[in-house]
Length: 359
Image (cartoon, rainbow, N blue to C red; front, side, top):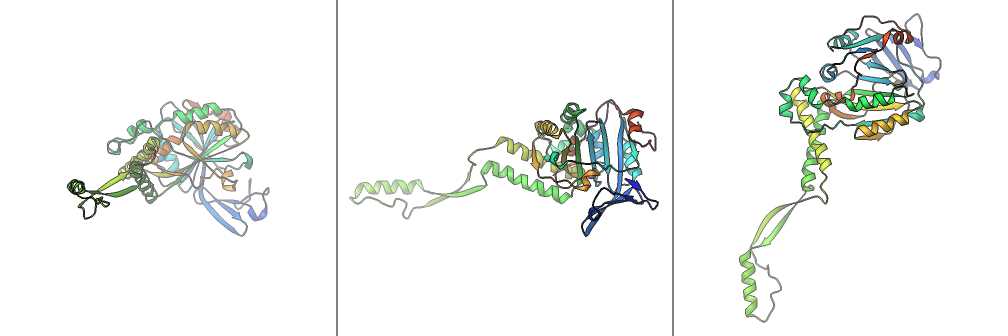
């Protein structure tokens, strides 16, 4: 893309009625996407590239909590072994201050936008949920610091395995984090609380009527002194009414474990005022089928329909996904240890760092 003197970016490769335009706004780029006669604007677009990571990094405390309310996405370019981050709405200085507070982490600001060709035949989209080994006690977790909670529930190894397996392959993975409301999380909690109840009772309660034992004995005795059979033993009988829960045909232990984990997650988020996001995974590129295989093997996930959009070519966070607390969403952020892009990688981007990375 090229800038004209007014700061407008002109895209000449796309049809005029669907052509996007980019202007430098008050803080970051403002991108206008057109769909025929309609259009919408995305404001405050910032692009960063991971430059350096030391061995220790506390992901949840820095990103998911401090980026609360900010849409962001992380793009893994496995072929180039580069990691990008796109943020929307938050000021550049605000985002950079988050990086500064992350010990051992360095990002470079790129004064440009992502803009790449995507083969729609290679696209796939999943929603996933990071199940911990043990159901969390939200009361206990709420008394711990964010760093301590991270050590309890953040497991970087699954994404690390994917990253290491895909290095050098011609494919990319976009992880989108879109802020969600407390009402959405509460709806999630209420739904899974019912799952737990129905899982044990089947959701069905019936009332049984039992004839009292004395009446039954009396009818039985009277039948011995008459030639007429007693056809209605409970006629005029005294009833005892009891409530009986009907169990499901097959109790699913795994389903209950997932439900209890999600309820505990929601309770903990409410107690600690944690961030809430909807998280989505999108893969594309020549070897996206290989990436998909590795991804499905690491997380319980559901495949969703996806189509190419111009917003996707900019790495902009995508809608949909599964709602979860920031503590759980942090499981989908991975920065490789002892990572350093080096000056060669920065020059290949065609952009010099605008400031020294904060390590």
